[in-house]
Figure 1 (spheres, rainbow, N blue to C red):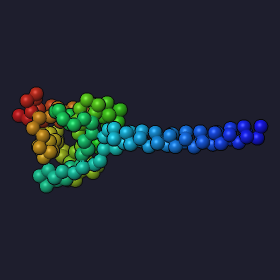
Figure 2 (cartoon, rainbow, N blue to C red; figure 1 turned 135 degrees about the vertical axis):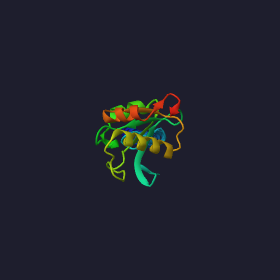
Figure 3 (cartoon, helix red, strand yellow; figure 1 turned 180 degrees about the vertical axis):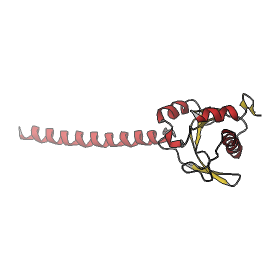
Length: 158
């Protein structure tokens, strides 16, 4: 009877050790895979800066690479942090999304313009500074006015 107990306890210990090692090995592989598949989204996109005619603009890029980028124009006084992540992340599943702070707002430098035409000119200059030949644009609230005033159409900037 004693030998059966010893064998059983030894077997259980070996099985436990084997299971723990196997579980750790599988966990490490799945963590590596999860890190490799991590998509840049609203919460983890790094803030970048570009000089636009002597003014530093803050922006972030998220979503898919390639294709025609989608530039989001914020509303009155809104920064790129005011976009709802559900919106930006949803759009980023199909598009390369670029969000930015207008001149003089949040992390962007300079003086905020007092009219829509000047803001539209800044948006065009920002897009050109990123060397983007063709973009889709979408504006929220005042950003919609800026989009209309910018002169964009399906062929790019007029």
